Length: 187
Image (tube, rainbow, N blue to C red; front, side, top):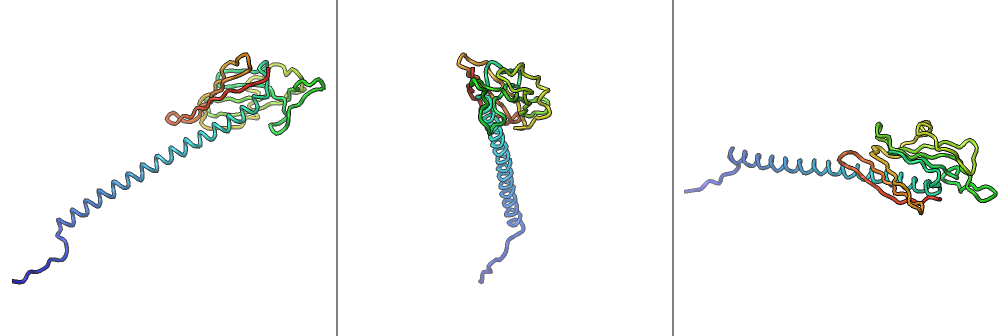
């Protein structure tokens, strides 16, 4: 008797193979979708860290050349005078070697718009005593966003040595980045 070799698959075998391939494909799609979601979250967190670091570095540079005497600290903001006409220039001194205050600088987190921002206003007549810090609204025209979304900015009262602990939080409710720095200011 001759045996006939069967070539091809039965309908049942074909259905089993298709089902297994479908399950495998579905699993791979889910893995890749999960990877994409995690990659987006990781990139968003990196962006938050980058924005927070840039904002904190600039705040440290400007605040360190200020004076604890004239510092104004509030909920989510800090206002201080600067003896520089811009961040790129040196300190302006009078003939006696005292700082000549040129402008007021404000760093703040607006919880209504979720922005961490910086603003400045010039001092009409630069002097060795800058006067009283302007209100937060005085900085609205020069306001520039440094980070979004901003969550909070807190400045702990300074020590006798003029050290202030500044904490900046940016991000969303599930991805928060917090940066804390000690900033020494002039007495």
